[in-house]
Length: 93
Ligand SMILES: [Zn+2]
Ligand SMILES: [Zn+2]
Image (cartoon, rainbow, N blue to C red; front, side, top):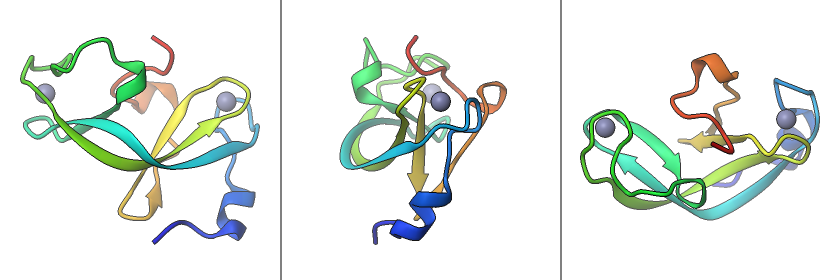
């Protein structure tokens, strides 16, 4: 189920407080071993940067900040608005 419009309106990028754009059916790469997902379009490789295992391609929902382009995954209908220090990979790198 997609997240509600009301929720989307109150969500903001934790870094710059700008709006986030909701995208569904985006490609992600999932490392089953580390249980980490990466936004496929930001990745150059399809192996996990942490453990080197090959990752599985999955579809997922994401919020992308209109200002800084950081992305925040929506996992089980819950947006993960994590600041950089808690993220496994940094957006735009
Ligand atoms: Zn891994
Ligand atoms: Zn931002």
